[in-house]
Length: 150
Image (cartoon, rainbow, N blue to C red; front, side, top):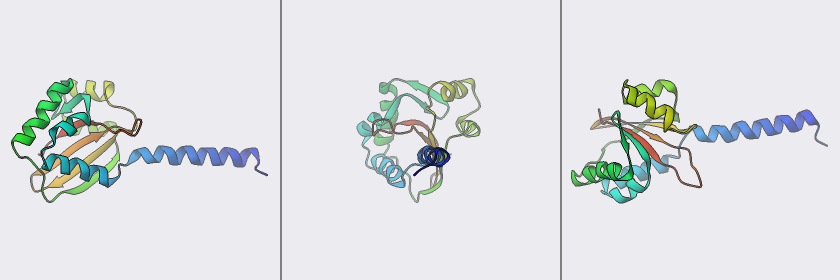
C-alpha cells in the first residue's frame, strides 16, 4: 500500500521529470532544422517559425516577414558547416542579451517567448549562431528567434 507521503513523492518526481524534459531539445530536431536550411527549404522553415520572430535583435511580426528571411537565406544558398552544438538548455533571462540589449529584445522575450523555451548555441566555420525553440505544443515546436552567425 502506498502512503500519502510516498504518493506525494512519486507525483513530485513525475512532475519534476516532466519539467526537465522541456530543458533540452532532441539533437535530431536541431539537425533537421540545419538540413532544411542547407537544402533551402524555406517554406518548411517558415511554417516552423513563430508569428512573432526575433532576427538579430529585430522583431519580425507576421509570417510574411519571417518567410522573407528564410527565403533570403535559401536564395543565398546559406548553410552552416562543421556545426557543433555548444548549448542546448533552458532559456534564461541572461540568454536574452545574446540577441541584443535593446528595448525590442526585452519586449520580445517578455511578450512572445513561451515558458520552457530552449536556447540552442551552435559553433560553425561561419561563426556562432543562436536560436530559440519553443516548447512542443501539440507535437509542434516553433523557432522563435535567430541570431548570427557572429
